[in-house]
Length: 477
Image (cartoon, rainbow, N blue to C red; front, top):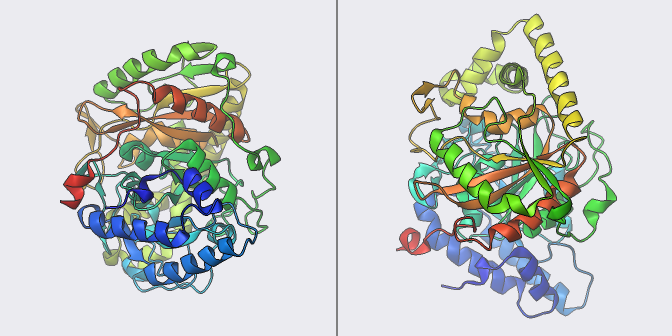
């Protein structure tokens, strides 16, 4: 089995540009890996191999002809099945759209194609992205590559698994309450949650709610950053879309950690967190904290964060899916129905209060960065669970108030409009990937990515914190 597909995206792009490898050769390596490993994990649910092969041949000719090459020229890319792809089935994880074939790429996908990316297929997601367990009624569950009977997280779980197993060098994701960050943490890959507007999301159901963002996933920070550069673009249909900071178009550097002040918090002061994950996080922090200028043990102010998230998420779900639930309740997954039903129970006063709470959280978050540069915390509250469950119902005998509450460690930063990166940080006590979040203020994307790149290098030097690799022999045997 070829290992070309296991190289980083940055290295592969360099090799293509130097004519040391062909895009055709790379694509076939990825297809071989998908065919060998995907039966065990169910990550790539729609395959576009015939079209990709034609595009790879064209990409090869472009290189040989000496033409100008895009950022992603010849690189296979997986697209989350919530994003519209011209001529490639896009189901949204829903039986209602099981045969849906868009006739146009959404903007972020068009940008990827324009930079030479080759769409190899669509990656699995829960229905309409609802929930952090990639499981739906169309394709079933996607298994964690470290233990296929366990969840890979969600909703960008298919992308995370495909990356971890070398099926493709890059994959897209999206993030509301942790949909990109949770699977990155659970599968041992990198995910970037950019600030609202950096990647235009012109299809967001409620245009004036900025919480859902599109973003990149990769096996390294450099790879994810490369995809982010391709995804970025302005679209007036997204009211938050603006020309990204020009710094995001320049080559990525590592931050000088000796000049960075970090707040260290095991639960953001408000999120459920298992005892084992508190202990693991403390142990990992002891390994890397000395590299920073200073570390401060403390907590951001997320007072009323649970309520603001749940109410405003309810507004979004009622707007996006209320009519679907009224007409097709029995065809939809329980997470979608639950979000809509609870959303309909809120009053106008509830919504108004939630907006006030979220505004206060976001302003307090901004003020925090007068004192520190980044906040570092775990990427999840507990180890991956069996994917035949829909979600985590309790942590250390504490029952979760809603199916989403265990995700507070990721959805609270969403309420602050934080920019962030999830890094792999070794294995947990169950031999499953453990991840950490590096978070900062909105608009400080360049800083948080540079800090993540520097910290990635530190973590790679220690056996306990280096990026874990799944055992492919167990998946392909």
